[in-house]
Image 1 (cartoon, rainbow, N blue to C red):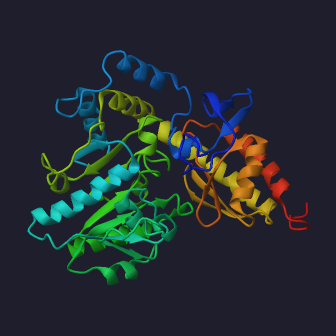
Image 2 (image 1 turned 120 degrees about the vertical axis):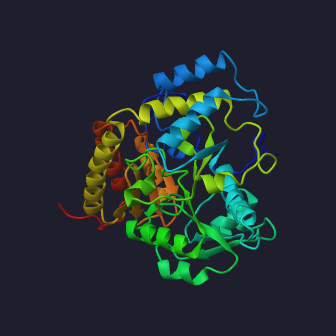
Image 3 (image 1 turned 90 degrees about the horizontal axis):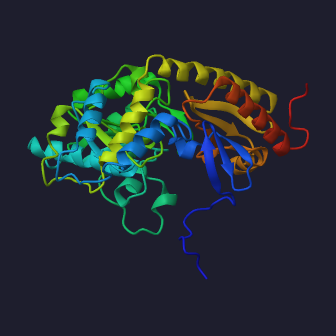
Length: 397
């Protein structure tokens, strides 16, 4: 007999009852160091007092009123995101996939409004992950996610990551824009080269097409800047964010420059739950912390400390790890053994991690993680590596 919950997840036999900071506690009371953070969602860790208070206070007033009416909390959050970014306007939604759907619709509508409805195709990249809707699995292009769901949604072209010549070669009179993750998460913690992002910005401008960034996972402070593209010094036309922006409360957004934002007129796009008073209260609380003086510099400093430890770990256990990759607190360990084996060994040690593509073990701790907690994670990973080490494969002392 099938379970009440549909079987579309391979769940570990653990149920967490509560969390505190960078730790989760299961129903038996065992403590786990959380370097998965709900897949880069719990940006402020667990039970952060400011976030808890903001959600509780808003829930006690009004949770939902719909976008048929003004929502002052959302207006305030949008103003803050505009002030802190390239964007002129913000659309709120509920998830990263929904944000990417809105982004692609806005791209297509911008071109149609400019008198070029034939420009609807979007260039995406090998190794991408943009979500699980029918359109977004087509944008992702991974056959594993497409299998069994019928004809692929039309309008997406795929090229190799970090290859500007390949992008240039597929631009046609039907191209509306480019969609890229500055750091690929699901695809294996692969950062785009900064020079490639700069070249991409120049190419899009020259070709008269739009540059869209998917910062669902790499945004909201995860790389040590509010948005990952800031490291390249570029300005996109439109961007999607989600995951960490609500600190665990479901929330996504499309940030856009005025030309793109004006395309989404009343009736063209909408959402029932997006930007509710409760969601916006959570988003504002998260921004309070992330935009506080010194916070992002601290994320960058902690990330560099963790990276040095990961690189040393890979040198010490070459039979298990072949190197580190990623950016900021969006880290990955390339594995020489199956990453799921290392993930299980880390779990046995009390460390939560996430598998990613290209046989990478993903490490995305809360942004409030300390150096001491990073050192603890490194020790747990070393113990996991010992458990996974093939015979005679480890480095000698």
